[in-house]
Image (cartoon, rainbow over all chains, first blue to last red; front, side, top):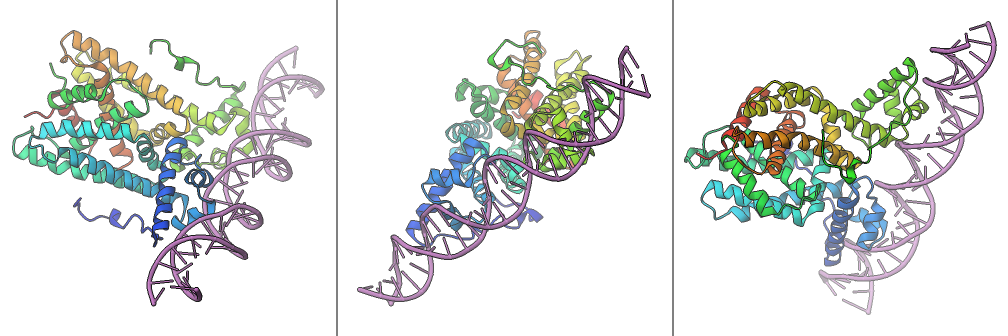
Length: 208
Length: 208
DNA sequence: ATGAAACATGAATCAGTATTCATGTTTGTC
DNA sequence: GACAAACATGAATACTGATTCATGTTTCAT
């Protein structure tokens, strides 16, 4: 992720209390994973520290050994989601030469990831209100991974010319909307059909 | 908005205490508009009734003359946003015969609306967590207004054939992503440029 | 084996805030 | 101009829930 320096590049958080033993490591993970489930299911505000720690099977106070505040655990989940999604997609498109095919398979990988992690998906959405900085970081990192591929593909004639910024945002918007269909609106349309239809739109547009 | 009956068609709310005098009407409007500003700026949870009423210039208790709960005023804002957006877009595309042009002008109208009402935009996003039913209602009404136009245009050969559901979702996703660029990411790109680039993608795709 | 650091506990603190209510004030009608 | 309904007030209520802390328990390097 190499992106021009900006005021946003101040580190988002410094995990202030890294566990130092295997036990601590395990407890921290348990809390983080409980937080993912509880916040994903009930939303940030209805998810109390009590809910999270009881889901994790530890006492309330234990939470504060590993996280400074409730917001901090949330931020960390958003960051984790970002890393996971980008990794998943880049993994899935690694060996694809053709940009159009990469686009299609990237979309498929994204939708499959979303279906497998509905909680994380909702958490990213909520970040716009709970932790706007993490939200922007998430989408900007995503866009920054997108743009260069579009620029290169246009240069080498694999796709037509066009503003890479708007394209990146629009393509991310499509992916997001279809992901939301799966997770929020619970569409029964299978992923493969969504991908085919969307791909046709992305490749050819809707002109007759 | 004629749409097949569904379990979602149970009325979302019955405004329980319509004011009966001009004074009451004015107070209710003042509270609603203060709520829009305050919730839009601070988010649902950080916006207290006290903040809202003081912004509106009335006492706390007055709030409960017009709204049963804090959630109710929020729901009403989401509904209002929905009505306004749909009205704005249908107004802007009313007299356009050609579907592709309608698509372009609809997008432009949407982006201009979003730029003029950034608060309402954020409120709709937050509805996913505060009032999921209103959120679904918002997007389904939107999609239901979209689909028929796509179906007709495909039938009459103004656009190519293709699944109208996925197309509707994808096009809404593009609009939303660009709206977010304006309001959340504060892109400087002028609306006209966004519209041109996105229109090119929508009409022709990215195939060389 | 043992002492210090790390980890864990859960009851108490502390602040915020949605909602209610008893008491005025204004409006419109007769 | 008086009466009832509508509207307005703001202090009091009631509750939730994040964070702290004094007190144990476990781990592990020596």
